[in-house]
Structure formats: structure tokens, C-alpha cells
Amino acid sequence: MNCPVCGAEHFSVPGGGKAAPAGERLCPYQGVPYTGLRAGHDQIYFGRWRRIDASTIDLRRAYHQLERLLNGIAVALETEDIPAARSDLGKAVEALHTAGPGEDGPEALRYLDHALSYAHRVIGDLLHEKGLPPHSPADFAGWYDAGEVPFREDW
Amino acid sequence: MIPLERYPKEISLRDDARVVLRPMIPEDADGLWSFLRQLPEIDKAHFHEDVDRREEVDRWAKSLDYEAVLPILAIRGDRVVGTVTLYRNKTGWKQRIGIVRILIAPDHRHLGLGTAMIREIRHLGEKVALNYLLAEVIEEQQAAVRALERMGFEKTGVYRNFVNDRKGHLHNLVVLLHPMSGLEK
Ligand SMILES: CC(C)(COP(=O)(O)OP(=O)(O)OC[C@H]1O[C@@H](n2cnc3c(N)ncnc32)[C@H](O)[C@@H]1OP(=O)(O)O)[C@@H](O)C(=O)NCCC(=O)NCCS
Ligand SMILES: [Zn+2]
Image 1 (cartoon, rainbow over the protein chains, first blue to last red):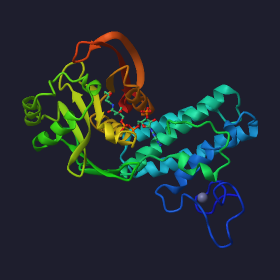
Image 2 (image 1 turned 90 degrees about the vertical axis):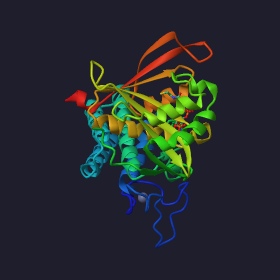
Image 3 (image 1 turned 45 degrees about the vertical axis):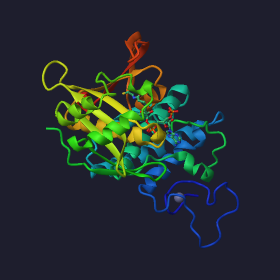
Image 4 (image 1 turned 180 degrees about the vertical axis):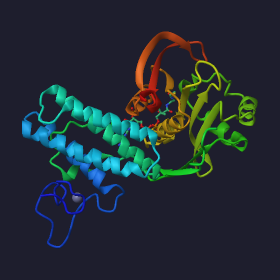
């Protein structure tokens, strides 16, 4: 089920244990700037499509999630004057289209991965304009089934 | 003219420290001198100025011309903890290329400051319609190569035994380029 706060699919308690006590909405992105973009990013970052046993459906899902994320980023950029971020968003869209919907195989995976990296950089630019450090998915890993996602020390 | 309205700009680092970014002014000579003195020798390799001489630093601070050399300082409290400098040619065949040099105080590394400084220089480079940013890094500085690559710089060449440090030892030079959005149009 999607989180009512951030819209992403994440556990309702870190570690994925029992559901949160009734009435308590637990979302790690609550109150942080760019809640939706961060959460949208992380559900892809920790998504099933990156696993060895990912199915075509997982990939198609990642594609559409990325499409939504890039649309959300485009909206956020409309009111900001960050040319470098606009250019990166363009590259993200290009990578996504090169990957194509419903494609699988290592090429498609690689382009989806590129698109996600560009998206991450743009979110970083947005945060930087507000004087904030970049978004670090590792800080939110406990809220996802992240066991098999290879650790990327870049982020 | 290079647009500087965004300064002073306050940012927070990964350890929640607050740092102010702003262009260097002549009064920063003291701060810059203290900053340079704490750097390990390897980080000073790329200076052509003699940064161990106070007069040289004073001269540099007094002769600022942002259209040619724009140093942005990162200041924490009253201490300089990082610099990024954009070098430009006002005329000639390289006027659309900006050269970038970045240096973060050793005790302020891995906090995201270097990346924030690269974001600043990317922004300024876009604003003055550069076609490329260029960074030259000695190969030993892998943190610099990685930090630049993560922000969109691409390694375009490695020149073997190409530059000498201030003791005369040779180093491989890694050249990185960042294409700017003007090129795509
Ligand atoms: C290159 C340099 C500017 C980077 O500055 P920095 O402030 O440490 O940079 P950042 O903190 O933004 O990120 C770079 C490092 O932080 C790491 N990092 C990024 N996110 C992180 C996180 N969430 N947690 C921990 N570390 C992280 C990066 O992996 C990288 O580490 P590495 O050194 O192992 O590669 C600095 O090392 C320096 O001044 N070097 C010497 C001068 C030089 O060579 N300049 C180049 C000439 S142009
Ligand atoms: Zn949520």
C-alpha cells in the first residue's frame, strides 16, 4: 500500500515489522523538503527491478515510477532557476526513453539506472538551492526491503 | 558580468554545520593564508603561485578580478574551510571554457562541501554561458576525480608523467570536462 504522506510504497515501520499503531502515520519523509521527490526516488532506488530475480513486470513498474518522478522533478524545476539541473533532467528523460517501456535486458537496466542517477543529481540541485545537503537514500534504507540492493558508496 | 546575487549563500553540511559561500574579497587574505597553511603538500601541487609566501597571497587578494578569476570561499564561523575557483579567459579561443579548481580543508572533507562547491561552479558556468568546465587533477587525487565525475564531469584523458609537483616529482594528470547545456542547443 502506498504511504498517504509521501505516496511511495515503503514499510510503515523501519525494518518491516508489525504495522504502525493505529492512528499513527509513520513516514520517514514527513516534514523534509521535497518529500514526494525523495520518496519517489527511493522507492525506485530500493525497487525490485534491480534484483537478480527481477521480472519484466518489475522493470515496467520501475519505468513508470521513473516517468512519474521525472514529471514531479520537472514541476519542481519550473519555479527554480537552475540551468544545470534542467540540463540533467533532459538527460534523465533521454535515458528513460532509450531504456523504453516494457524492455528488459542489461541495456534497459543500465539506462534506467542512468536516468535514476540524473534524477538524484537534480534532486540534489534542488536541495542545494535551499541550502540543504544532498538526499541520501541510505538514510531511508530501513523503510524498504533493501537487503539485496548493492551498496553504492557514491550516494 | 558574472551574476553574483546568489551570495552570500548559506548551506548546511552532512554534519549539520552551517557554512557560508561567497566570493573572496581582499579582506580574506588572512583567512586564505590560514587555510592554505593547513593543507598537506600533495594538495598544493597544482598551485603555480608560491602559496607558502604570505606576500604572494596578499598580492592575490588585492588583485581580484572576478571576470577572470572568481574564487568562492566556504566560511564556517570566521574560518575558511574550502575554496572553488573559476578561471576564465575574457577573449580568445578559450573564452567559452572555464577552468575549475577546488580545495576543501582536510578536516571538512566527506561532508558534502566539495559537491556543493561543484554545484556552485556548474551554476555559475551555466550563467555565463560557458561551453565546458575543465578540471585538471593529479591522478593520486582519486577523491577529486570521483567527486567531479559524480557531478557530470567526464574523464577525457590521462597524461602520463605530465606535471611536476613543487618538489619536482612527476605525476599523471587527469583531465575532466563537463559539457554545459549551451552546447546542446
Ligand atoms: C576533492 C575534494 C574537493 C572533495 O571534497 P569533499 O568535501 O570531501 O567532497 P564531498 O564530501 O562532497 O564528497 C566526496 C567524498 O565524500 C564521499 N561521500 C559521499 N556521500 C557520502 C556519504 N553519504 N557518507 C560518507 N561519505 C560520502 C564520497 O564517496 C567521496 O569520498 P571519497 O573521497 O572516498 O571518494 C577534496 O577531497 C579536496 O580538496 N582534495 C584535494 C584537492 C584536489 O585534488 N582538488 C582537485 C583539483 S581541481
Ligand atoms: Zn511515506
